[in-house]
Length: 480
Image: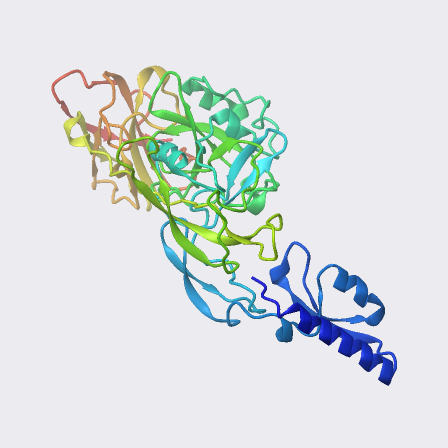
């Protein structure tokens, strides 16, 4: 925040300068303290011609070097602790002019983008955009994160549905809004098999980092899904649930611009939305308090308005500059923001209570080292070779990398009749085992020449019919 010396001193300085000029002859240039309109804390000493001096003085510049006129708010290069909107603390540095503090060095700093084509306002970047390997939320937590988000002075953020999320896609004609992909709000799970919903070349989109989204957005589309053994990036999740399966939610992989369904508890990226256009709120609604530009402080947000016993969320706000304020001091505290979030406790593991398919897996000949063996369960009525969708039964334990198996050395594997996330047993019905031994651990995990599989004739199993079953099978794989 600028603090100027008394006006009469400035007048005397100007008069003295004019008198000196009259005695010594015209001086072609002089130092002034230039104060940019709309950004007064970015003042700097410049040299201008005497002919230009009146115009500079007319819009608020001052005669003389800034160091002699403006009182510093802080010592350039000094540091102090500052408050972040995610309830953490960080450090900030006094800027080079001493007029205020640089932005607090928080792990996550959020803004928003108004899409003029849709009048939707998007959180920017997405949640934890630059935290590689972060264990992201599942869809239920994503819904809650957006509901609890307070950003830009607004608390009506929500998780977008798939139709809203598709409006962000750029560079892929079949998955953009109005494209041929049939996966929309109200779709069944089978829409994920629509070839028009598949992706293009990875990281070749027009957006930041090659993402298939609007160039105005920031963020990342290459965050590793820490639960996926094949290093697939996280999908951006929506609020859309398949109409025929409440455990599958629509999502977009912006690394390729593809649209699909994934399990409701899969880790996901989150970018919240609100109805726009959103008007910038520079100052909080409270009575305006002056402050030092860039500094931060903690504040509280009422989380349950209207209830008898109030509860509050920890939040933070930053000293901003608002030229519309009356008077010389244009500083004010921005609205409180809260971007913190606590993940729900892990879901209960029920896998041991479900039917168990215990396999002894053999190969018919001596083989070289293989990369991975996978065994999963698929509903018979929708089973294809190779499968074109995620499995119905089996967990991450049924993907074994660098398996120890060879002729005369079988491998033991148990496939529980539960969902991949172990949150429930699969519905009663007939299921086929998909079992492959692959030389490559690349995606998609489909067999190639030199690989082995269970073969086409293995009969289906009837699972989850009542009392827990322990089914033991010996399987000799065959060449693909």
